[in-house]
Length: 254
Image 1 (spheres, rainbow, N blue to C red):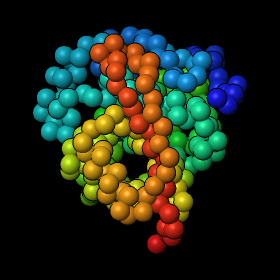
Image 2: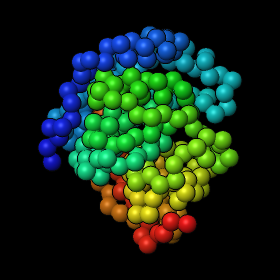
Image 3: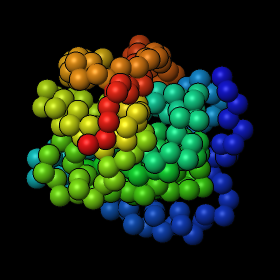
Image 4: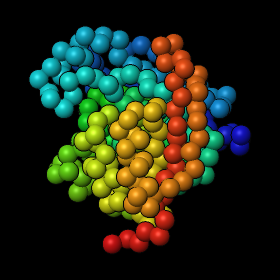
């Protein structure tokens, strides 16, 4: 594995005031607790602040049809695997304009920033955006630009505000239903620069398989690696995450 000496230690000093501000702004999600996450394939660990009271989160989104479960508050193997893949090949994001779809608690974002990405992190949940900023500051000493976005809705008013020439798009476990396939493909073809990289991590859900089939028909291809953890939650033992590096051969910018 290539050395990652440029990646900073967890909780760099000098950011106490910013951390306090972010903590105050997300106080409404209830108590937070630290959880230690190992980045697979490396010696690095990240301490992630995440909500403790899941019932409170459920109550807060009960009337929101787009967020009936606070999935963003979980530590998903795919996001951790994608962080490991970035740590293994940091040159693929270093200094690159990078977009993350569904940042969750910020594990992938923290490693991408530490590797030198120029990152815009998106999520539908504003709480996820704040906690991503908080966790990236604690780990990498830096924050991404953040945008609230529902990428599954083609006419989401925030989509036009995104750049249309990202060198890299990061997406971890974003394909849950058949309706997700076409919007993700269309978004990639709109936002990625010619020769750009879609880094997709998926744990074998059927919609991900459909997405890969459709993407291949449109000319997307690239290597895939398999990641078996370790994952922080024992219930995820046995999950294998596949991380795909997809580029569209011969695509020219419209």
